[in-house]
Length: 207
Image 1 (cartoon, rainbow, N blue to C red):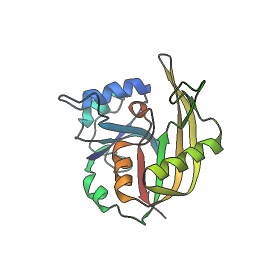
Image 2 (cartoon, one colour):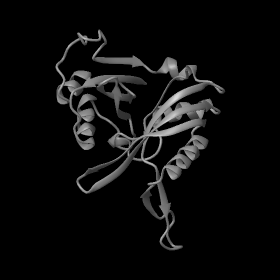
Image 3 (spheres, rainbow, N blue to C red):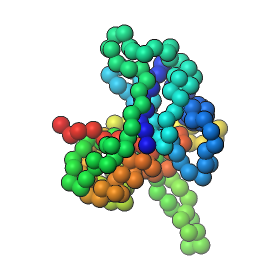
Image 4 (cartoon, rainbow, N blue to C red):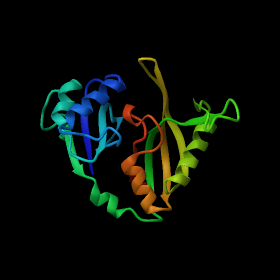
C-alpha cells in the first residue's frame, strides 16, 4: 500500500479526477475492487490530492492533468510537490489503545424503506449535524475505533451527470479499539462514494 500527495492548482469535478487517477495507474485493474481512495485537502493555503492505493501511481500524470507545473520542490516552502511513501510500515504500527487525530471525508447516508417488501430501502443523505455525527459513531464501531471528539469541518454537495453525493468532512480525535478492523478502514475506506472523493480516513499524531 502507498500514500501519495500531489500539490495541485485546480480541482476538476470528481468524475474527472476519477478518470485521471485511472490513467495514473497503468495496467489492468479489477473493476470490482476499489484499489484507490482519494481526497482533496487544504494544506496551509494550497490544495493537495491525497491518494491511498495498492500500487504506486504515476504522479506526473496527475499533476499534468490538474494544472500544476512539474517541479521537484516548491521554491517558496522547500516542500516536495509530489511525494509517494510506503504505507505498510505505518499500517503495521497500528495497535489497540492508540490515540490519533483523524480526518474523514465521507458520504453519510441512511436507508429508508417505503414498504415492508424492500430489503434496505432508498438511500438518503443525512442532513443534520447530529445525524452525521451519529453516523460517524456507528462507523467507528464497525471499523475498530471510538470517536473521542469530532466536528464537521466541511459539508457540500457533489453533483455531476444527474448524480448528487453529499460529502461531509469530519475532523477530531479517535482511539483504536480493534487494530485489524482499523487497518482495514485505512486501506479500504468508509462508506459510499469512494470513487468520487469520499471514504478516505487519515490519521496524524494527536497533539
